[in-house]
Length: 74
Image 1 (cartoon, one colour):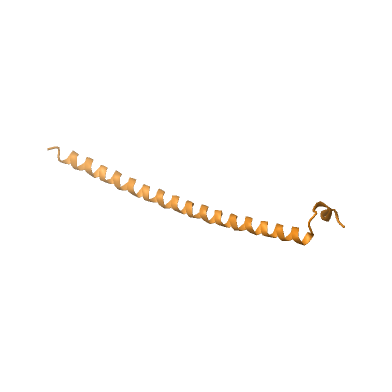
Image 2 (cartoon, rainbow, N blue to C red):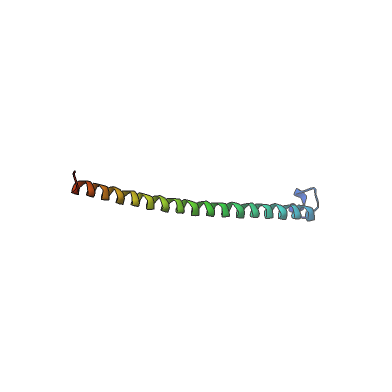
Protein backbone atom coordinates (compact mmCIF):
# COMPACT_ATOMS: atom_id res chain seq x y z
CA UNK A 1 0.00 0.00 0.00
CA UNK A 2 1.17 3.47 -0.82
CA UNK A 3 1.29 6.42 1.55
CA UNK A 4 -1.73 7.89 -0.29
CA UNK A 5 -3.84 4.85 0.58
CA UNK A 6 -2.95 5.16 4.27
CA UNK A 7 -4.23 8.73 4.48
CA UNK A 8 -7.86 7.73 3.97
CA UNK A 9 -9.92 5.13 5.80
CA UNK A 10 -12.47 4.89 2.99
CA UNK A 11 -11.76 2.80 -0.10
CA UNK A 12 -9.76 4.65 -2.73
CA UNK A 13 -12.59 4.24 -5.25
CA UNK A 14 -14.97 6.17 -2.97
CA UNK A 15 -12.37 8.83 -2.22
CA UNK A 16 -11.64 9.26 -5.94
CA UNK A 17 -15.36 9.51 -6.74
CA UNK A 18 -15.80 12.13 -4.00
CA UNK A 19 -12.88 14.19 -5.30
CA UNK A 20 -14.18 13.94 -8.85
CA UNK A 21 -17.65 15.16 -7.84
CA UNK A 22 -16.09 17.92 -5.77
CA UNK A 23 -13.96 19.02 -8.73
CA UNK A 24 -16.96 18.95 -11.08
CA UNK A 25 -19.05 21.06 -8.69
CA UNK A 26 -16.20 23.54 -8.34
CA UNK A 27 -15.80 23.79 -12.13
CA UNK A 28 -19.53 24.32 -12.60
CA UNK A 29 -19.59 27.02 -9.94
CA UNK A 30 -16.55 28.69 -11.52
CA UNK A 31 -18.14 28.66 -14.98
CA UNK A 32 -21.34 30.19 -13.58
CA UNK A 33 -19.45 32.97 -11.82
CA UNK A 34 -17.31 33.56 -14.91
CA UNK A 35 -20.42 33.98 -17.08
CA UNK A 36 -21.95 36.33 -14.50
CA UNK A 37 -18.80 38.46 -14.42
CA UNK A 38 -18.74 38.59 -18.22
CA UNK A 39 -22.38 39.69 -18.25
CA UNK A 40 -21.79 42.38 -15.63
CA UNK A 41 -18.74 43.71 -17.49
CA UNK A 42 -20.81 43.93 -20.67
CA UNK A 43 -23.56 45.78 -18.81
CA UNK A 44 -21.03 48.22 -17.35
CA UNK A 45 -19.64 48.98 -20.81
CA UNK A 46 -23.15 49.56 -22.15
CA UNK A 47 -24.05 51.89 -19.27
CA UNK A 48 -20.81 53.85 -19.63
CA UNK A 49 -21.37 54.20 -23.37
CA UNK A 50 -24.95 55.38 -22.81
CA UNK A 51 -23.82 57.83 -20.15
CA UNK A 52 -21.20 59.25 -22.49
CA UNK A 53 -23.77 59.64 -25.27
CA UNK A 54 -26.12 61.54 -22.94
CA UNK A 55 -23.24 63.68 -21.70
CA UNK A 56 -22.33 64.55 -25.30
CA UNK A 57 -25.95 65.40 -26.10
CA UNK A 58 -26.23 67.61 -23.01
CA UNK A 59 -22.98 69.43 -23.83
CA UNK A 60 -24.11 69.98 -27.43
CA UNK A 61 -27.50 71.30 -26.27
CA UNK A 62 -25.82 73.56 -23.74
CA UNK A 63 -23.45 74.92 -26.38
CA UNK A 64 -26.35 75.57 -28.76
CA UNK A 65 -28.29 77.32 -26.00
CA UNK A 66 -25.33 79.56 -25.15
CA UNK A 67 -24.84 80.30 -28.83
CA UNK A 68 -28.52 81.20 -29.31
CA UNK A 69 -28.54 83.38 -26.18
CA UNK A 70 -25.38 85.17 -27.31
CA UNK A 71 -26.81 85.79 -30.78
CA UNK A 72 -30.26 86.88 -29.57
CA UNK A 73 -29.80 88.84 -26.31
CA UNK A 74 -33.39 90.12 -26.44
